[in-house]
Structures are given as structure tokens and as C-alpha cells.
Image 1 (tube, rainbow, N blue to C red):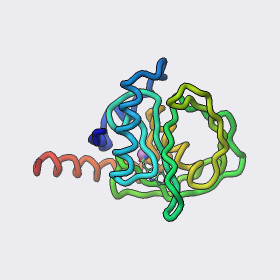
Image 2 (tube, helix red, strand yellow):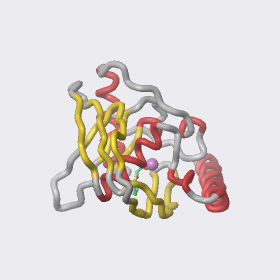
Image 3 (cartoon, protein in one colour):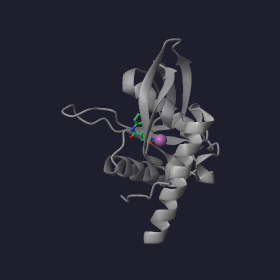
Length: 173
Ligand code: GNR
Ligand code: NI
């Protein structure tokens, strides 16, 4: 198990659509393992493979809140098969856009189908924070970030801050 570095926006790898996984290999299992560890370490409630530089359709998430037991999930090739007409607004953040938060409106509930690590097809109805998180992660797999839902002024302000953060980090590294 290895923690992997998380890419910071702007990075061309965060803007590319990811490729479906065609076989669940040891490499895929190792990646999922590393992603869960990296997500819990951050800490975050979700992580998409492109955030660690792998352009494959894999995401991890766990939106349980203490004192509930954890529920580490790995979703391979996830697809939204239904979304509610009703929407909800969440203050979103992203591990690839540290310390920046903004309200995003999305369908309040979604039904998602995916492949589990054992190769079985799973389907589940997500609500609340889980619904927001799974949509945020699937967006990553399509090369979309939450700031893409903001107006151009807010988006550019955040992008400039991230460019500065990356410069400062490179200087002190
Ligand atoms: O840790 C995270 N928190 C979060 C909060 C509100 C909406 C979405 C998220 S996902 C984010 C981790 C992340 O960047 N996943 O891609
Ligand atoms: Ni994110």
C-alpha cells in the first residue's frame, strides 16, 4: 500500500476523459488500494484515479461520518443510470483544489451502476452527500472539476490561486 501524490489544478491530466477499465488486474487492485489509503490520509470523502495521474475510470469513496463504521467503496466504470429532477446544493471542495469551496447544484439523488473489484455488477441509489460525492467523482472521470460549474470570474480567481500555490510549492520543494 502506497500513498500517491494528488495532482493540483491546473493540470492537463485533470481535464481529460478517462478510459474504461477492461480487465480487473493486479494493477487495478493495487491502484484501488492506494487510492483508498490516499483518500483516507488526505483526508477526503472521495478520490478519482485521474487525481493520482491515472486516466482510468476508477473512483473510491466513503461518506460515512464518525461514529458510523467506515464504508470504503471502489467503483469501476461507474455510470449514472438515473438522476432525480429534484436538485440539491452542497458546498463542494476538491483535493485537487485545496482550501477552495463553492456551492454547486446537482441532482439530489442518482442511481449508479458499476463494476466491483470482484467483477460483479453493482447498482445503488445514492442520496445526500453520497449522491453529491459520486457525481463529483464521475465528473473527474470525464475531465470535469466542480469549478467548471461556477461563473468564469470565480473560476479564474480560483485557478490563479492554484497557479500561485503550485509556484510556491515548487519554490520551497
Ligand atoms: O473530500 C472531498 N469532499 C467533498 C465535499 C463536497 C463535495 C465533494 C467532495 S469530494 C472531495 C474529495 C475529492 O476531491 N474528490 O474528487
Ligand atoms: Ni475532487
